[in-house]
Length: 458
Ligand code: PA5
Image (tube, rainbow, N blue to C red; front, side):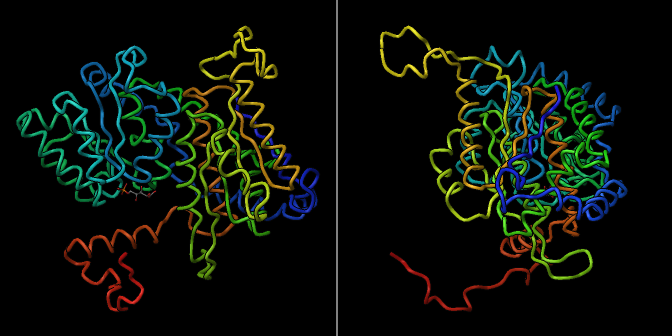
């Protein structure tokens, strides 16, 4: 069940001057080793998560009874408090999990509401039975306005529907212990609280209670998810770049970035992996997009992540990738065995389309992906492929861990703080100012003082 990584089309052998050469690798040996050592020796807390058996037991025994009685579980969180759950959940659950009872194997429906669009919340409340729904509010800081707003609305509705005593049983809070406003409220109200380790940032927290609780409630095997993470952890701790896929990917990206490839396209060839692209986009964008390096130099570095879906986006974006500027790396996510098979029938009474007949959709997907990779390579475009033998808890845990290590190694190579997000925090402060939160009065720039010449009302 191991993942495979094929970086051939990142090299000069295939894409000529656009590629990375063996001599680049040899020259950069010290640089790569430095980034490897820095990452491995910094003992980042997220790297411990796949090995926390105590937490797995606690989560499983808490979630099992909820799985039996809940009709739905709703996750409220945003950014790193939502995207890992979507990435893993949507990969592993039936694509129509919420619509088809027989595929849920007795588990509840799941919704991850990571926006405060009023129509979305209203629409959600219209399809759930609040009395039979459990709500997991996830916020590492316990201060995020979006999640707290959702909490205020939903807890109020729950109390009205069930009374205070019962309402609180439907609320699970996942947050940093003993810190943040939501933690204080959760203690006061008597909600079940799961802790997020202090030193684990949102986008690196999917294998903590952040991901494990909702994924366990909907019946996924969190032990296998962590096992996949643990085994990928082992691969990512290998010093030899030819045996360490995350180190190789990080190097290929950083080397190519320095040669002007400022865009990282992630293109899963499987609908189930669609939200892996969102997970990767946040991890890569928020971790590496930094103004300053660790020595205090202004660097304004980063590589813009772009999400695409194969084959769908072959028919919208591929033209640009093949013939536009040489500013992209395309990462394909491939799947060998899909969970379902569809065969194109031979005997349809239609005499055309002979080349399609008798093939499976799996073969079709594979042919399209290989053809795209080949077309890109032929045009001198950097690309590489990560192949999952199948999409299951083990491979998904491995893939998530691979992405986190790739990001950590790249951050070390770029000499930036991979784990902070000052740009995001600035946005949060501005929102507090606009909403009138005490202490944030001057946090937002007043654009009206620049006049209205450039505002056009149709
Ligand atoms: O990765 C991150 O740190 C961020 O994307 C956060 O997850 C996001 O801003 C939400 O923050 P919080 O979990 O504190 O509500």
